[in-house]
Image (cartoon, rainbow, N blue to C red; front, side, top):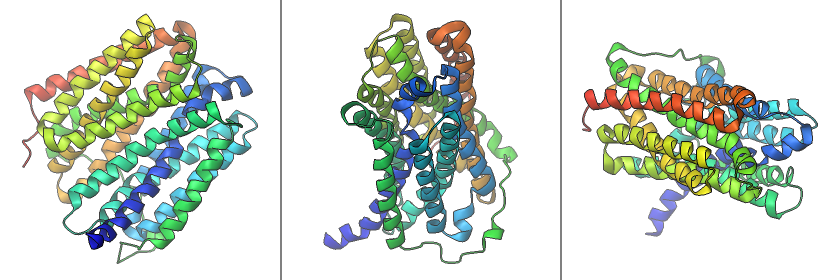
Length: 396
């Protein structure tokens, strides 16, 4: 038993480093209202500040998505932690809106480096024959870290001093500990290549993948869009429409969506890929409907239910999409196809969120939210109907 625990220790420590980095990307979520008061900017600006993060992720995925395969996992992850620390420093030093833009961009670069490299590293560090459990560790670290960010910042902002500073000081300390852990953990890429060997990856879709990719990409886009809106504007909706000004509650509502997504991803193993995609689409539709009800009738309980149901749907749909697309891809094109799916997914975080921000001034926050929900419902319904008519191949 003791040897088994020691065998899992590196994997679990790698997962902890992964979680720390991802927590930093959602740390500002419950603090945007405080920044609005401090720097006097609109709801549109909040959504743009949030979406800048996605542009950073997409840029890294396209330019250096395979970097850790070439130069090693640890160098890429250390760079990712460096960007995370620089992002925290930008928020700590923020004297105007420009600092927030730079901080979010650096956070996106950090997440882009971590998304693929940390997942691969956690799996590399697991004991032999434990790939399935290692995937669960990576999934829990990724989505759990994203959920812990707003929860940590919300609690500190509500119940401690210096709400715009203390969360980032704590995160800097966690990043420093994570760097020390990374330096202790072994490198798992044995044949490393020079940095110049890293080449930008062009999105690629072989013909045999396209029929599976279309519904998988739509479901991923909608799931990430729902998360984007939840993360960027739900604190404002809670404050303006529901008179909820407690930052810890705002952080908890956002965190619930990410924790529920973790549960949805973990359930794919039991549900099966062929069923998880259409079921995920159905739950995403239900989550959108609950969010519409929350906007229409100003009910906190519907916001919470939308977070949980939509989060489970996002987890089922995205992991199902990832598995289906990877299974349909030829081995020599698999990495490029998966990178393309991630690009589409992260586009869902940016484009619809900015659209909500643009509509907020003429329609109000609730009206803009309802337009967003209607558009996403059409997309996810289209994907679900397609999947019912042409199911993805049965799990082998």
